[in-house]
Image (cartoon, rainbow over all chains, first blue to last red; front, side):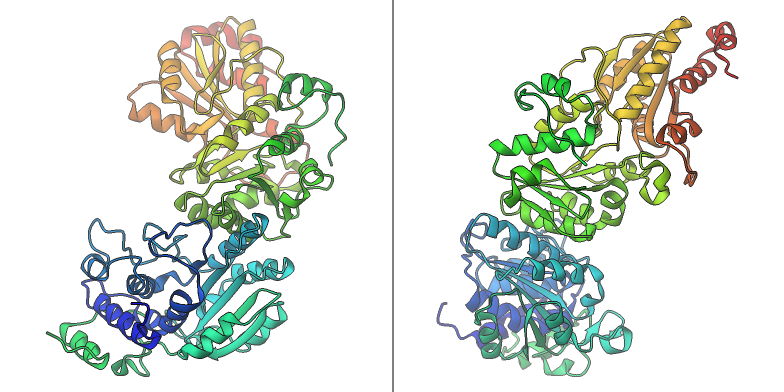
Length: 269
Length: 345
């Protein structure tokens, strides 16, 4: 398992995500696909986590503040051994299951339930302050959406992170350019997002959010301040039939699923 | 805001002696001293503020490393509190009730309640205690909102000693809590009360004509004063201190309903959704078949300047007005005999 290349992991996670899109309820497909490399870089390379001990005291933390991308997070947690992929596909959004359409903290590997936007940075600041107080090495990674940066609570919490110089905190913005009702730039512009994060006091990098090497380099660069990474991504990335469309939410037909899996290197049965 | 402490009593060991040595401290100041003292023995306790610590906070002085003033960002303070709690701290977050319960409402709902965080939201300025500061600084809806959140424990202590005892119990309770305080009242009990037990209403006075169910420094004081006035008129009142609004002590409620002819809730909160609402819900669902008169803040925003006491009087929250209202509400034989003696004016 440990020798599986990260690119292959990303491809497998996408296969799981498109399967979840083909479940009776569908899923938040565009933003789940856009964030795959970010999650792979974190769970597969940068973060110190053990799927056998997801609640260990000393470890790193991942908060998916853009909690509507639950399908992406669950699929990544399955790829890295926190949960069973087949069970996820069978039980996603189904009666009695823990796999709700927005992130549930009942799922191993999840610290906080998310879905209402604008809470992850504040929760992450609290984790960072608490671990610093306890002199633990735990690092905290918060993944937001670019549309989500419209929530003022994110900027409140970023001020606190910078003021307290929380070097154990990293905020990654999945800049996929879309939100529920359309393109972010036409609804509430997030132009100069990197400059604004920098001005707020975060050590900020802007990278191609589908380039695993670039993501890992940015995530592993040393910092004395809290870090922000603007990950420029595509909604629906990795599935050619979605190029330029990148639906926010989708319910796949059997035919959609077959085509999507084929493009991800899997021959349908 | 906080005066230096007098005397040598230990607040944790002999709270009554400590309060005797510090007779002018308000209940919310007592809270700060008690939290600072209890934190001596519990390194998990931290205190977060959003620029309303008031200066000279005893917790800050004693435990500077565990005191964080986050600035004016109540919503973020509550998210931060929930994040910190996940690292094993017992996180106290303080602000005014209007801001804790309403501005930060979603953070309280999702982080504290849904996330089951070990966070204690402590709010002063409950009810109309913000007085002349106006409705932006009143909280007449907070208990209705917090009570509706699954898993939340809601406590409103009636005096300084109960504030200390409730705080002691809440530190040991693993889960989300809303502790509601007033502003400047200095409340010291005049008689001995039963031991404080979280979730168990305490009977402060026995009686069989009317059952007064109250919480908080204003509600309990008004209920006790009304009971004294009623006694002078030959009406006996049972007074229950329902300091824990959630979980509600339904056994005590049922016992009070069975022993009296009328229930009256008394609280510094809107007559919608607070203790009055909680009692009515349980009276109906338990089929107790008794009338409930809900007294409290009327269903309106009161942008009238004046002292706290003056505002309370405008809503009938004083012992004389309450006694008169009860006499009107009691079954007829008594009312006819007693009303003239109490009519004011």
